[in-house]
Image (cartoon, rainbow, N blue to C red; front, side):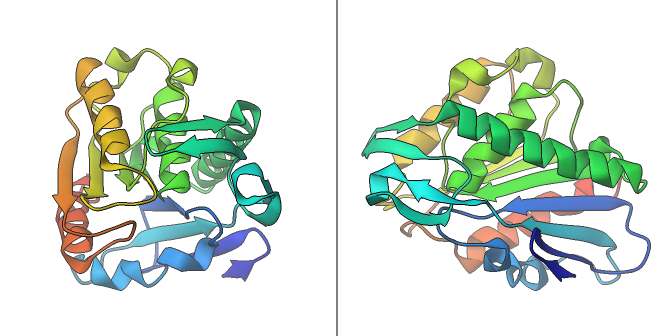
Length: 221
């Protein structure tokens, strides 16, 4: 189903699990729809796939140009982002509303995987690590943790499965930012599965296949 809010579909009838995937800055929900068939999930896997659109807003670091963005980036450098934390929190609330909507439809949060690329991955990290209830897992691709001060107590998320991946030649979100997020999780007692690929700010087929292998056991629970 395509709507002003995003795109959603079920890969088979009666899904017991959901995947909410957040796109990057300037893209929209359609960006990662083609990835689902490439995950290599077993035939008949019933998964609800939800690809929301970020709101349209001016982005300061892009000269105030209006685009789809989960939050405003006030300034950036290779190893730092200064962001609108209120906007980040608003997007986290939007994601929480999506999670609540799926719970109302019969899929509990413990069977929902939250994924995101770049800015969408930053929202995925921030939402998952600030909430108290458990999710099935988090996928963080070519991303970072934009506001560690907004996170909850990381040890409470020790059992949260995390798939984190980054291009080693990423010119938009430096690999060091991705590694800093990974190290923050490790320090908090989580055990993220980390992958690095020979690419820039993008995804590659090897990465998607690795993600698919990681997802399979989560969708069997």
